[in-house]
Length: 508
Image 1 (spheres, helix red, strand yellow):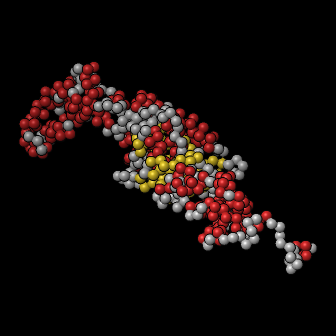
Image 2: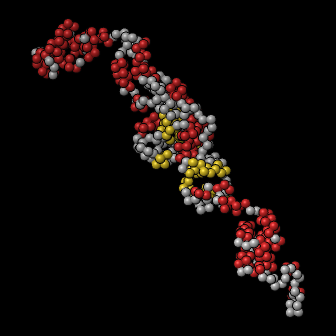
Image 3: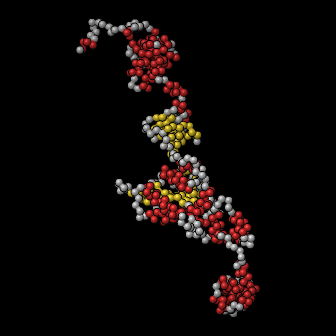
């Protein structure tokens, strides 16, 4: 219309010829003649045209086009189209068919799509993004913190603000936590899922250490605990790209709005506990989710209930139990160390690097994603928890021997063998040492007869040498087969009396 108005100005005001006007405006002289003819039929002159706007000139020059524009075709409701497109499986083509069914004289498909896209350009960036119902839950921490005052010491600590918001409905969950550490990060996720009463198909967090061990654009390395949480709730974690805030524009926008409507509203309040702060946040959160959008005639809660909620996955029967993960190498004694307590694993895994899942009550050990051991968690430092099944056969047999079993075997072998075993167990400071000595003497029976072993134990008992080495030496040198220098009953004979032996009475 700017060019049309210029053509009329040059003709009626400047009195130029049609060909000069066509050359000046970059059009054909036949078009100039057509516009001038239309102006003549409409009874227009330059005095009237100069006062008219483009829409009025167009109506006068092209009356048929204006009538066509004012046809009875009903415009589609763009807000409704925008909301319906968020639902799973809904497309513009489907919505157009429904529109045409109610309005047979309505717009054709190409113009219907064009009208919607033009309307969509007027929305802000975050709302213009297409998010499927229940598909994405965006997660982040607010940059702003809230101080909590210890009523006893007066010391102030800063509470971190966790936010989770849905892409389709912008429905948001907010809570305060002591820090961004892994236990609180996991706990906030659990609370968010329970607040929504369902789980989204995807989680889109930032690349903080509690969620991502190593950021990567293509294959980020997730924290094992965070990955296990996602598996438990049947969802998938896809971290946003590093330094790409548009990947999580929804939560960035939610953070900004939450800071304005929730955190700023609490700026003049003093909080003395985390529970008190979260109670205040929950009240403000309800108002926030029930407030209408600026450009959509609905609220976050209404959108969530109609769009996101029906598409969410149900919560599992049991709440996720928090667990830490660690990598440990098996020691030579087929034990691993967790918080300075030792737990056994199958002995063939010695020197292997294993994954350990640690909860408040259980320690699970995994090798190549297969559980190889499970123990009740113990908090006794320096102690050990051992399962007999994890031991080599030789170690198992060793532990099968008890003091009563050793003495029973010794008694069957002979009286003096039994007396020697009793002396060894009384003499040794540690039971483990006594076991070793007795088991060593027992093994000597494999190379010698029971009679010779009994004779060797008799001689060792007589010379007051209560050890495995003495018995082994006697057998090796054949001393058990030599006549006893003092007779076989020497052990029972009273001390020798002789004038040269003063005895213990001499020193009294």
